[in-house]
Length: 615
Ligand SMILES: Nc1ncnc2c1ncn2[C@@H]1O[C@H](COP(=O)(O)OP(=O)(O)OP(=O)(O)O)[C@@H](O)[C@H]1O
Image 1 (cartoon, helix red, strand yellow):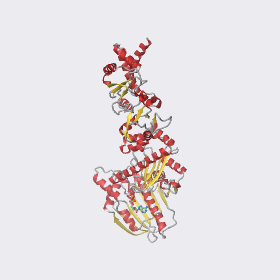
Image 2 (tube, protein in one colour):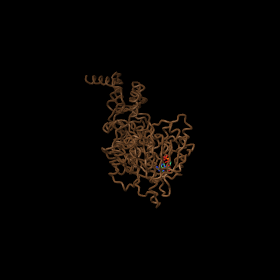
Image 3 (cartoon, helix red, strand yellow):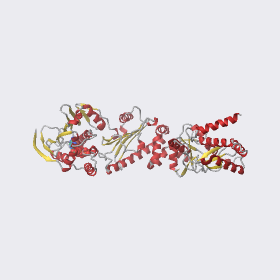
Image 4 (cartoon, protein in one colour):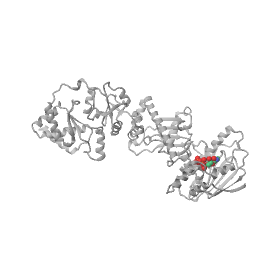
């Protein structure tokens, strides 16, 4: 029974808003339920607080819960909470006017844009009014926790006015009844509603019942104290949010108060499918505001290269209806991203020193993301290179070295950090480039992918030490007694003649022929004039499908090597075989540096050489 009924006009802004809500089509109108459940949960939370501070509470024994009743035949959905409730004045104030900033931003957006994309309504925070996306009539029964206050009823079809009256026989809390629009009848179906609850409201800390049946909700572990959570609970939670079957490799649970209040629970899985080439991972962190989902698989909360992280970030400072479109929100998200990324990288670096074996496991499967970040995200490059690990000429089998380790054990007179690229340790260690480093006992880091070389060359230096790829022309190695071994070499004149002739034979492929001070067992190597390493050039050869897309080389020859000396001999005798041999030596040097050569010319030449050898 209702008494004292009056009809009131909505505030002008509300009218404008409802007009849009009612007359538009939406893509994700199911968010209306998230809004209503979140309002209900807020009301219950407020009541919980009142129970502690106030003695007199209407219907003090009512359980704190949210109930949904669906009537498929009658096409209605009712959502009831036993929360704080509203008085008559509060109903008029809260459901007849708009005061908060989210809606103002929405109006501004509507006023500015040509295309009125109303589906964005959910992102702009009009909470309760979202009900009119699916209902052509909304009735709210509410009774305040204040025992003195009478129960009230509010009803509207959203077209300009609402009625307000008193209602008898209500218990504390709020019941909102939606008469569903014809095209929204699906929202009276239990399976549809349960799916939506699971998606948006899984962590709501109150029981949710749909037609008397409790929907499973999960504890929002991230809001709990770390000491109160068991490892099993963490694993279960991880499996739930990541849809995973394994155990996480790492877990990071933290809270910060400044510059923003954040609770976060992040996981690194054991492995991922992107490594195996099965497509690209989607971001795995969901953004919550006080346990209510506001962005699933958020693209904003972490940089893209951290897309392997699974978990939850909750910040009560975020508006429920966060939007990239508003400057204020995107600034907030950027701040959040900075805090979380920084904290996660710090965590990784702590793990690397605390448990190197486990970190190695992480590095094996997730290094691609760290490298992606180091290569593309300038803001984090310096932090990320510290997390990189390499094999090296001084590391034992299976041991990995950080740039920091390398610098700490550099030789006293050594100026630079040296690295070499190759597909495997075995291949690298047989490389002619390493000869001199073995001899001088200088450590060389092994890089396996072109992206490693790209990162190191972009970085340029680490802790004031230049990063030098060993296929660079200028090595600037410390001098030593072993530098000028007692070996028979070509005379200066012979060398100059040979060099001139080689330039003529190899043409544009080389810029210079040099006498090598670093080679002993190999006749020749090719060197690069800049930091664009051979592995990077190989990548360009493959990307451009052009084997000639490599820069001209410096050819360094070992004039004490029998092959070079005999080559010079043949040249002096004008034997045409000398040309063939020179070209083959050059191609061999290209292959040793990791570049791809044209197999047709190479194989042809090789047969001619075999033919002559077999004679
Ligand atoms: N179930 C409810 N119980 C008690 N009060 C409610 C309930 N639903 C809404 N209200 C009141 O109505 C106000 C307006 O709700 P509305 O959902 O439009 O905006 P909001 O909740 O303030 O913002 P948002 O939904 O963007 O977070 C709320 O702030 C709250 O005071």
